Image 1 (cartoon, rainbow, N blue to C red):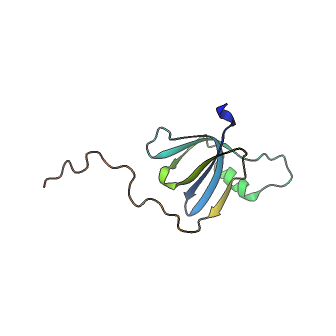
Image 2 (image 1 turned 45 degrees about the vertical axis):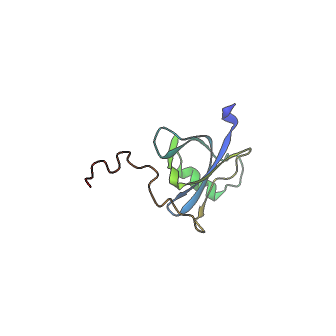
Image 3 (image 1 turned 180 degrees about the horizontal axis):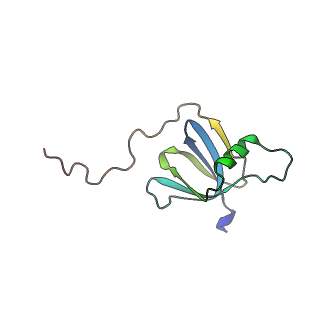
Amino acid sequence: MASHHIFRIQFVNQGKVYEIYARKVSHGSMLGFVEVEELTFGERTGVLLDPGEERIKSEFDGVKRSFLPMHSVLRIDEVTKRGTSKITQLEGNVTQFPTPLYTSPAGDAGRKT
């Protein structure tokens, strides 16, 4: 049943917003990363090809699993139908978190006061 889920993932990469579709999304085994598997793209059965989707499809060609930094992910939605994957220019006031999400538990343990 889980294979019928489709997720739309939007994330920032090098000043652009990527929108991709995948069947599996999880927090993964790497701390601070979102794991994305089984990317889905449109089939090439039609005469018309979407150049935007072809560009993103070629960028992820051969990728089995992708690890996205948590601070670059804008949004993850579970959707009923797969849309068109695309890359757009980043517009507006979208910024990354200004401080690290994870800090050392030792903190100031080695510092003398």
